[in-house]
Length: 347
Image (cartoon, rainbow, N blue to C red; front, side, top):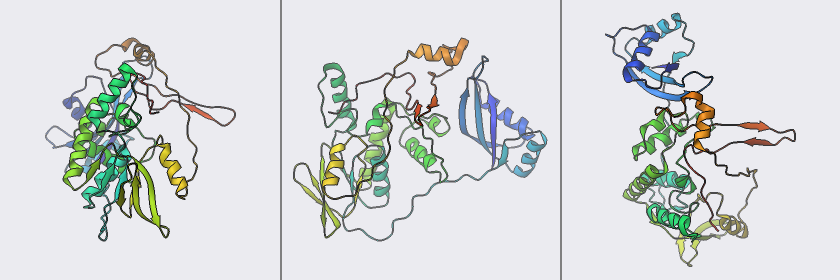
């Protein structure tokens, strides 16, 4: 396989224009069979010219070595042999007699439960909030009336806080083991749009994400997972220094020797309970954020200039960062282009 980077395409590009650009760079005629996949696409809005896409393609052909040499002779600097890396979940060793418990069904809990279920371990999933549909109704009621359910809201419930933040999938970590690519493929498998596989700033969209989450839940159930919504974790139970169970808020005790705490950062009662149970907790730095709402038209004008309003362009976004003299950093994060600020109370 050959990876070809920095292919510049116009906003209204077609499949044919992609292929023509690749054939021209690789020096092959129309009679030669090419198979290619769009691996990455970003929008270049620099300067006052018309915005354009900068793309990366993975190309397969019978004469790959010759095509690669053609590209080098043509002056291409961003073409190189490439082998795709695909993440594989490690196989489960041994047999467990007790079902593992997953606390929380946000992003971490969803994929933790998915991996456990597909490995034949039949997890029990505890979620303090409602299923995604009931949660959405309660959230809408909160927006209209101010009536807050402290256990099921924008922060708590199936899907976690991310379910109401446009389903953004941006990360700044290096994907050396292809885990991020694996996550994106699984999302597409359960109904997310395919463009998240190559978009520079992938997002699913809140409305679509609800269906994706439900599909993942049903898949986990098919593989033996059991869900307990509106069920709050109270504490861990240990005996002789070893975990032996989980106590729920209603007094029920689940017998288990494995617990995955996927509770996010807002379930402070869980941290307090763990501390009181003697579980070692370690502090870590965290960022304090504020929400800012701009007119989308103003952001579009600042980024797209005279091309603002072009129907081929998505809602514009931006990123800014500054390092202050006292060593602190101020930066934008978690932008939701085309969205709006909502009340996100949970208490």
